Length: 250
Image (cartoon, rainbow, N blue to C red; front, side):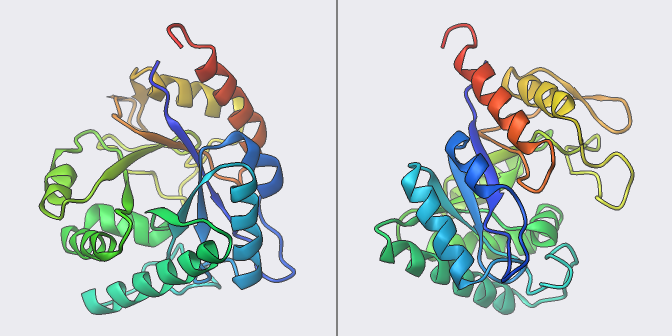
């Protein structure tokens, strides 16, 4: 079984509105993708989430999005390449400034929601995002969706000298090509921790999971995401961590 980095989307509360189980989940993960204020989060939430990650020795990633608080960043927006670059630089810089004040740094970038899905279907958008991430100091890594075939994305990243982390999702359904099934469709999110754990362990063991059309799908991943707003998250992450630590050969 491959030991995958466990990551979770964090810091997605806003003002008095609370979302996720950051304090409970943080001790069990390797990487925290922290909202940067455009789909969720605010300066105080960002500061507290960074502090929590530092306390637990968790890598910090920027989780930038389209400017869509009302839609939680899950609605696509028509933006020029320069607008996308400006949005990303702004959000990454804001989180990194908060990190620096607490003796930490942003080490990777994982776009959120519709921006994440759009970049996986639009080569020009993906190229823009790669160019932005590679321009930041500190050799930031970019998190991309692991699909049936990662070679095209890897070749593009090589042109920018950019390191990628291919990501699989323990709690999401996939189509036959390895894209995530739209959240608007039934069954797109796995809600029981038994299902989440089973899919996670299949991915870690490089065994096929079953796509929405019933076909087998093998994903070559470096990191595994469980969403912190999923009710099954905490129990699933604890079980996944325990299973990986006790796997044969570990």
